[in-house]
Image 1: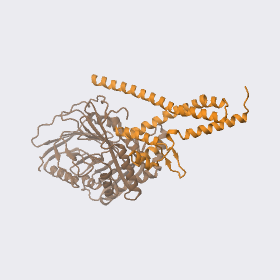
Image 2: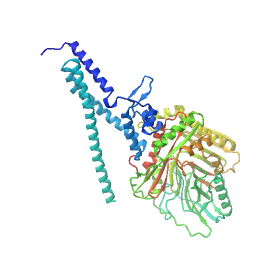
Image 3: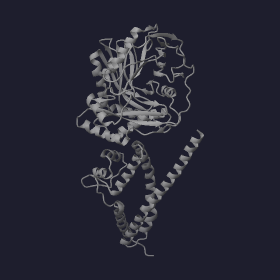
Length: 182
Length: 415
C-alpha cells in the first residue's frame, strides 16, 4: 500500500473537517433563523420577559448571533420553546421547569461530550485515515454526520421516553398502593 | 355593639415545660413566641369589632380600651402580655375582610423568665376547661401535594419584568410582588404540630398562629413597652451557603450589593419616616446580616422614645402599614402597582400579626413566611422587592427559596 505523505494527510483533514464544520453549524432541518427574540415570542405566543429569563438562564441558546450582535432563532428553536410552553400550560410551575432544565442541561452535556468524542474517534478518524480524494472524504464524513445526528437524537429521545414511562408506571403504582394502604 | 364585661385574673405560676402548643377541646391555640418567651392562648372571650377600611386599627384599640374600662382586671404580675390582651392579624389590604382581634379565654405566658396564667371570663360564661398537660402529638405529616397557584408563576415573572421597567422609568422606587403556592394533603394540616415544628426550626423568629394563619416571621414591625418602641426592618435577601466559607462569602456579597442596599434603605426610611414625628429620639442599628435557617437578610433595628406615651401600638400600626418591606415606595404608587400586577388577594399575608394590651403596649410582626391552613388545604406566600436592578428569574428563585421553608415545615420532602 502506498504511503500518504504527511502534508497530504493534513490537507485532507482540513478539507474534510471544513465540510463537517459547515454541516454541523447548519443542520439541513435547522438552516434558517428567521426570528429575533421578539419574533420568537410572537411566533410561539410567549411573553418576551419569559423568553429573556429562560435565555439568561442559559437554557434557550440562539441558533447564531448575527452581524449586528442580535441572537437569532430558528423554527426548531420555536418548536422547542412551544414544547416548554406545553409543559407550563399543563401546570408545571416555571421555577420547577427551570430547575429541571438546569439539571437536564448538566446531565445532557456529559452525554453530548461523550457522543461527540465517540463520533470523532470511531467515524471521523477512520474516514480521514482512509485518505481518499478530498471531496470523497468530505462527502463520507458529511453523510455519516447527517445520518448520525437524527439517529442519536432518536436513540436518546426514545430511551428518555422509556425511562419516563417506566418511572411514571412505578410512581403511579406506589401511589395506588399508598392509597390502598392509607 | 356592647361587649360583655370580663373578669381577668393573671397569676404567676411555676415555670413549666417549654412554651409550646398543647391540645385543647377548643382546638389549636393562638400563639406568639420568640426565643422561648411570649404566650400560647386558647379560646375566644370576645371578638373585637375591627371591620375593614383605614380605621380598623384604631377601632380595635378603642374597643379594647372600652372593654377594659368595664372589666375587672386583677394582674399583680404586670409583665408584657399579662392582664387583658387581644391577639390579632390584619388583612394586607384594608378593604379586604379577614382582619381579627380576639381576646382569648386562657393565656399561658412567659416573660423575663417568669411564667404566668391569665384567665379571662365573660360575664355569665361557663368555666373554661384547662388544656391537656402534654405537648401536642406530632404525627409525621402526610406528604403535601401541589394544588396550583392563584396565577401561574411564569405570569408572575412577566409581572416582575413589567414592574422592573416601571421602576427604571422612575414611576416608583420599589414594589414588592408576592405569589402564592397552594398545597393539599390527604390528612388535614395539623396547626398545633405545625406551630411546634416552627418553634423548633426558627427559635429566634416570632412564631405565630391566629385563626389558621401560621408562620415564623423574622421581622418585628413594631413593639411598644411603655414609652419605648422598637422595630426590626428586613429587606435584601440571599441564600445560605453549604459551608461556612460559602455562607460568609454570600453574606459579604449581600452587604456589598448595591441593589440590596437600595432595597433595604427604602424599607428603613419607610419606617423611620412614620415613627420620627411620634418620637423624641430615634436610633438606628444596621444594616447587618441576620442569618436564618434558610436565608440571610439585611437587618436594621430601630428604637425610639414616644413623645406621647399614650399613643398605642395599633395607632402606630395604622400609620406604618404597609411599609416598603411589604408594599413598596412611594407607598401609593407601589400599592397601585401591586393591585394591578400581582393578580391575587394577599389575604392576611404581609399584614400585621401580633398582640396588644389595653394600655397600648404590644408586639406586632409582619405575617411573612407563613401559610393559611384550612383543613386539608394550605396557601403559602412569598414575595420579593423589585427595584431597578432586579432580574425577574432571580426574584422567582428568591421566592422559591422563601416558599421552601414553609413547604418543608408542612412536610414536603422535596423542599
